[in-house]
Each structure stands twice: as C-alpha cells, then as structure tokens.
Length: 126
Length: 141
Image (tube, rainbow over all chains, first blue to last red; front, side, top):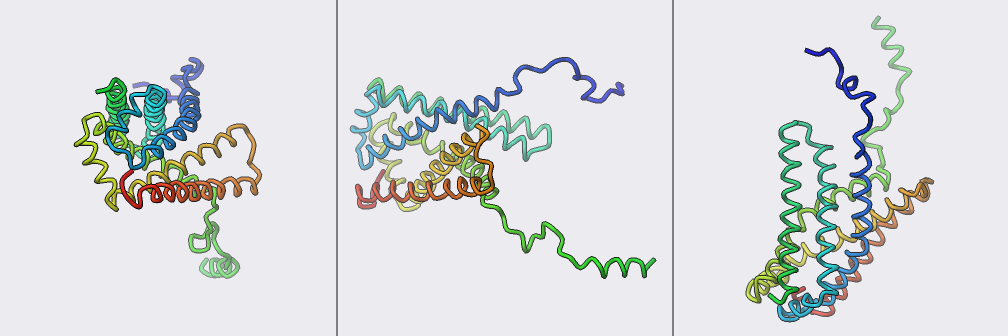
C-alpha cells in the first residue's frame, strides 16, 4: 500500500490540457444560445395560434429549421454542462455521482436527438 | 473556573454574525441561486420542447393533442413559467458575460445588474404573454 497522497502522485506530471474546456464550452454555447433563443422565441410567437399545416410549412423553410435545430443542439450541450456542475456540487457518493453523470449525458443526447430528428422530418416535408 | 466563565459570558452579549434571524440575503446571492434553479427548470422543460417537436413531426392529431394540453390553464401556467425561466436565465447569462470581462464588480453595479436581470425577465415575460393572450384571447400557443 502506497503512503503517497493523491496529490503527490499527480504532481509535476503536467496538466491534463483540458482544465478550461468545460468553462469555455459553457461560454461558447451560452453565446450561441443568447442569439438562437431570441430567434426561437420570435419563431414560437409567430406561430401563436397556428395549426399543424402552418407549423409544417414554416419548418419546411430551412431558414427557420436550421437555427431551431442549432438551438436545440447548443442548448442540449449547455444544459448537460450545467447539470454536470450541479450534480458534482451536491452528490458526493461516488457510485451515485457517476450514475447521475451518465444519465445526464444520456438525457441531453436523447432530448437533442428526438428534437433534431423531428425538426429534420418536418423540414424534409414528412 | 465557573466564575471566570460567568465573567467572560457577561461581557459577550453581542449578536453572533451572520445571525440567521437578522440576516438579509444580498440580491446577487438570491439571483445566483435563482440562476441555478431556472437552469434546472429549463433542463426539465426541454422534455416539453421535445414533446411538441415530436408531436408536430408525428402528424396533425398528435400535434393537436399536445397543443390542447398546453392551452389548458395548467399548461399555460407551465408555459408562462418556462418563458420567465428562459428569459431570466438568459439575462443572468448576460450578467455573467459582463463579469467574465472583469468589469461590474463594484457593489452598486453588482446590485444594479442583479435587480436588472429580475426587472428584464419580469417585464419581457409580461410583454410576451400580453402579446400571446392578445392574439389568442387565451387559447393555444
């Protein structure tokens, strides 16, 4: 059994080169979300009271479908990073933490996947 | 020993700080907590967004079913809450962008930015839902 502390084991090995990635990706997707969410709000407001045919016709236009698709993807990445921080802050049991982090990733990808597929289907006239 | 403690205790009749009953939470602390809560709410709320999109892609019947739920008053309350959470989180994000540049840390500025996010999200939510209700007379999104 080693008497070394965990810190001693990793000291002077150099950084993992990804320390700022989480922070930076959170900011990049936040900037994207700022613009894309305003677009999405305007799109939804333009469709207030619209029937299914009007929604289909609107999303058949790539100028509307593409930003909406990008918003869903950017928001999913952003919310996965945010929820990861919340889980790491409040869940301290190792097994529960890893399970929740895994579920977090699955949830974000499932939401992004379902939404993307739906937008593409509408966009291609399905 | 007992005398020494009694003497020391008699001198220390001051309030303990921070005292929970006389503690006033700073607005930036409250907005920080609300930023995380709205983020969590938006996380759960994406299920709703995905449901609407999947329903729209599935056909007119599914779309009408989902929008009729959302037009019912509990659905409307959820949508108003979702609108506010999105706008508040958006404004809080802008505040964090300002802080990321290293500016806006003076105490008055911190207070102003924190109250500003709340004022923006409340005003914008009222304006958006005023428009929605004006368009529909209280019906579907």
